[in-house]
Amino acid sequence: QVQLVESGGGLVQAGGSLRLSCAASGRTFGIYFLGWFRQAPGKEREFVSAIKWDSDITRYADSVKGRFTISRDNAKNTMYLQMNSLKPEDTAVYYCAAKSRATMRYDYWGQGTQVTVSS
Image: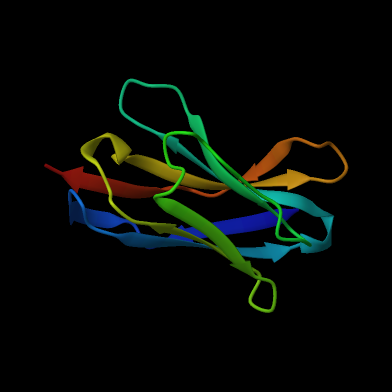
C-alpha cells in the first residue's frame, strides 16, 4: 500500500502562483510514476502532469505546459507541482496519484486539495 497526502492548495488571483506538495509513504518502492490530476465541478477528472519515480521523465497536459512544473525530492518522498500564471479555468480539486509498477495503473490516490483561481 502507498499513502499519499496533498497540501498547498488555496485561493489565488489570476496570474498568481501556488505550489502543491504530495507526500508519499508506505511501499514507495513499488511506485512507477507519480501524477497530478484535477477535477473541476461538473467535469471529469483529468490528467495534469506526471513524473517517473526514479528518473526525470515528465509528462504534462497541453493546457498546463509552460505554466506548471512537476518535480520530486526522493529523499523526502515528496512530489511538487509549481503552478504559475494561474487561470480561473485551473480551479479544481487537485489529486496526487501513484502508478504502481505491478499494475501500471494509478492505484493509489490522495484525498485532494482545492485550488481556486479568482478572476
